[in-house]
Figure 1 (cartoon, rainbow, N blue to C red):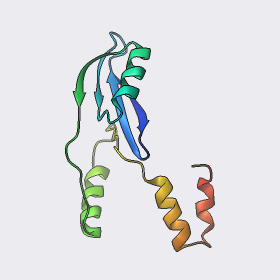
Figure 2 (cartoon, one colour):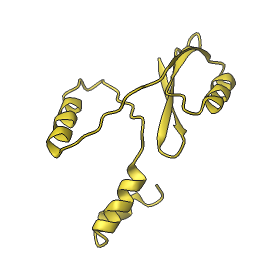
Figure 3 (cartoon, rainbow, N blue to C red):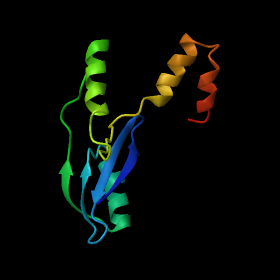
Figure 4 (tube, one colour):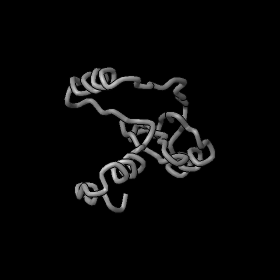
Length: 111
């Protein structure tokens, strides 16, 4: 089983999940269907299923966020988590605004 993340829109990911032996697979959250179809066609992956998430988690308090992160931290070491959104760039912009003198943010130049 192989999982390939595909960047989508400005801050999202779609995923191709497929069997490397017979090239049968599925796609997850194909928010750019033409792009996803071209990629799976080019790979020769037989896209037999589509999974589209219909909900999202909104954290309202620091306690809820800590609880959710604790659940993730306690998953078995071999667990893979594939997020649907990417906020690193925006978070780094916010960090620069809040702490312009913090040099640690310079470790992420080029993101």
